[in-house]
Image (cartoon, rainbow, N blue to C red; front, top):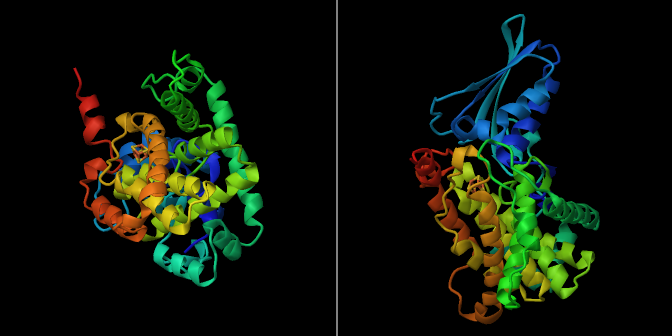
Length: 402
Ligand code: SF4
């Protein structure tokens, strides 16, 4: 399994697979072809269908400038290819001097068929939760965060501290921002209002929801506004983990050093899901993005609350199980509706999953590995309309409203 560094990428929103991945691919291709005097990029599948709303064309033009660049939104169905595929073509005096097919596989990662050197290295010998749990029990390791340090070295803590500081900054920036999000949907930022609104009650459940939701909105709105966020595991789902961890820090007084141990555990859940299922909305729907984020947050919380390895696994499993089948149907191809609100709802679900794991772990029947397999099977069988194409569900109904 690969490093948890692959799960947490600091960058600008709104989409890890539609902006961060293409940005990385364009930089690589440009560096490979210094002789080019123009470029053409052909986008397929979800990249073609929601590329404008997600800003794919904008980021490609930025990277490939100042050379003239043509972006083609292809309607061709590349049977058997990843739903986020793009072809780069380098031109010189009008003739092709180089081509490259790249897949944006989620979380900002790219894959070039036949070029394994672009893949990040394998860091963990174990590839499933069952293998990790066996190893930890055999080595008397109680915490997934210790397992992370064993494999990634002590340097991982500096990396995770940067991640956590960026997450907190995104919350602060999002809570301070006002106005309308870009993209033309006229969506007002709500985090500040949500955070400051007098609920008119001291009912603890409502106050808890208000704060967690405000944090999740803050980060997700920063993402939608092209602000700096951390993928966890993707841009679209970037608000869930920070919201839950910030609330835990506020209410339980966890230090930053303790919080990043939760991030390490969450990273393992994200890496396992990426390896054994998917974290790409275009590949497996929103269950792969927000569902994974919810599992990561629940596992992080369980680690912070000193739950044992079985309970951590159960928290992550419950969080994913009740996102199974969740479609990706963003209105107008923007990462705004339903994405922002969904981050807040998933953050609350993560809290609930962690509470359930505290009481019921002993009677569970489903493992995290099983729910991952179910998520993948469900995802690849979802109709393409519900996998980040904006051709079905809310996106379709909204487009046809009267
Ligand atoms: S609906 Fe979910 S998967 Fe789709 S763009 Fe929004 S957050 Fe990402």
